[in-house]
Length: 438
Length: 193
Image (cartoon, rainbow over all chains, first blue to last red; front, side):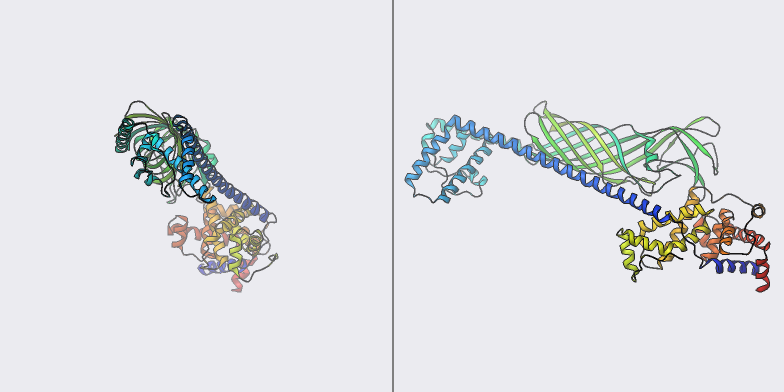
């Protein structure tokens, strides 16, 4: 008997081992179409990423440009103001005439250089003006040697390519000694104020935001003949929220860095669907609800050992993901003033601390049952996001500033692994924060 | 066979690297080189010809998308064949067709009712016989006889016990034998051997 069976095996091998058949005629066409489709999707995804990156870069450049133009305009207006009050151009012109008389004539390029230096000096004056050092204060430092024109150490420090002498300023500009003393007092007062400001570059920021969490989905494989679109279509983002504490350190008037600890609660509602009992790797039939985050296994279905063909009607459900986030953000002040407008960019590392699914379904006995599934299979604990947004702040008191900030958190790594769909959450947040000066 | 490839590259590596880079002509060459062999593999594992054609398409798409994972460790044909078999198994898993309980006797009766395979045994008819086996019997028979796998390996691959694998192979052989015994070819085989 066994010999017969072995002979039969050999018969099959002999006849079929080298047997070949023509493949179906349209098979290659179908394969090529599918490959083209996949390539197109791949390029589309790549193009979308590049387009988004380009838009972000363009926005950042535009912000920087606007900021630069605003500052430039402010500087120009200050120059005009100072010039009109002190009659600076006329005096400088007068002095330049004097310089021409008292110094040998410079070649053209020298004059050009001198003119550049003059322009540069205006900028330094502007800088000092921006730092609340008045023009008379500046002149005072110039004239400390009673007529010998040497810039102050502060000016030297600010002007790396300083060449002397570049602005001959007449001591006549100062009317008398009392004026000089007054100005010196003002200067020291301003310096003290600046020092006080520098002592408090830290802020503590309680933060809260409402989030709308969507995602981009990369399909890995089909599950129960369902694809990423099927999963996503039965999920609806619910109102989620984030709260926590941030701290801010001001590098300068326009740049600061923020870091802290945020706690997020993300909710997604599930609409009605049918869950089929499918076999897992161990050969056991299980009711597994496939979501964009992973699989939620329904255990208390009223069926002790589900079999092939068993189904469960899911009435509704809710997915909840809790995560802790540590952001590192760079804040750039676009419009300094009382109402401050800043751009925010940065990265955040996120750790999922709880993943839960709450489902309501019709069990085998036709009763509606509720079940909380404490673990969603496939969730990856850590993922990274890039953060971008804007913030408007307004001082309420001397030490408290209120801010509102729309922020986008865009995941660059997926929150799951080995699931039919790789999910990269995108969170659109509308937040509020209180800056407390330390 | 029938279709010769458009042109053959001596260097298989070059063909593969061109396929990886998405060169459709080279992919077509690769397809033409192996499709005629792979369709037979698919036919053996599938329930019907249309199923086999779908497996062939899925398999080749997977081959072209995962070709960068081929490490030149074994023959390319063997690697592609493995992908085709995995596709076939996956398809059966997805459709939940792998584990229906079918008794050999009942299946034999079912087989007996079909016509058209009684006159002389040809390869096509053998394929038809295999296709008409119950799913699990067909898988075990294919893996054991054609892929020379051990029961332990089959059991691991199909998530069944070794005993089940042996039992399925036995059932498959009985069913095939019963079918073949109705033909002269099997008698001739016995007497010839």
